[in-house]
Length: 208
Ligand SMILES: Nc1ncnc2c1ncn2[C@@H]1O[C@H](COP(=O)(O)OP(=O)(O)OP(=O)(O)O)[C@@H](O)[C@H]1O
Image (cartoon, rainbow, N blue to C red; front, side, top):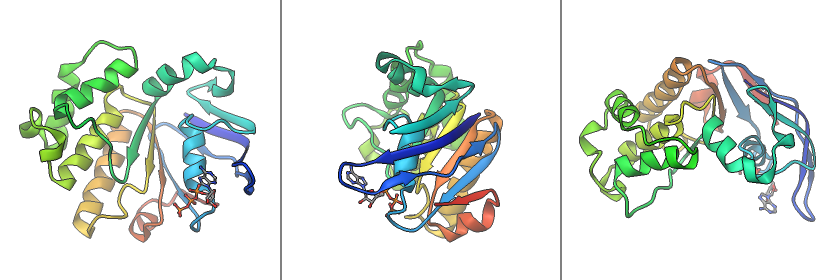
């Protein structure tokens, strides 16, 4: 579903990163490990098409993303890639349901309220759909963040340190949710982490 080939990237005046080739198939989970500063978030941003490599390829769902025109990138990203952050960012003036429906808008798709309801029922936050995101607990916000990544049935889910701030119980919950949801939607799940608990759980790992 996602593979990279000879990816390189350099911030101005900084190290020239040369990343190992990655491959993650539908329904699989891959952990990206590495010391602080080794370039994990940079690699995630390259796979999320938020940064452009100086050379090399990111292939998603059979498309060499380097061939996409800049004007095509936002819609391609919204349709194919779900992003999960340690601390999700939402639009505070909108309620939970509206925040989720925004994903459809960015992907150029009609609003899918049935999908919102399905995900909310599944992830256990149906009772807060009409609330502002700021009124939610941290754990609820995290589940809404995961739902948002799943709204367009993205085939690639990229998660940056999704569990490092969580206690063991919530770490287990979030890891389960991500894994089960990715499997159910046939998505490749790629997780950047330092978290030893995830290292013990997911054997498919690559170190930078
Ligand atoms: N926008 C930027 N401009 C210049 N240098 C940057 C920028 N972002 C990151 N870097 C540098 O690139 C290197 C890799 O950063 P990156 O965030 O990818 O590492 P990381 O492995 O995710 O680190 P951590 O585990 O600490 O989050 C670091 O040395 C960092 O200082």
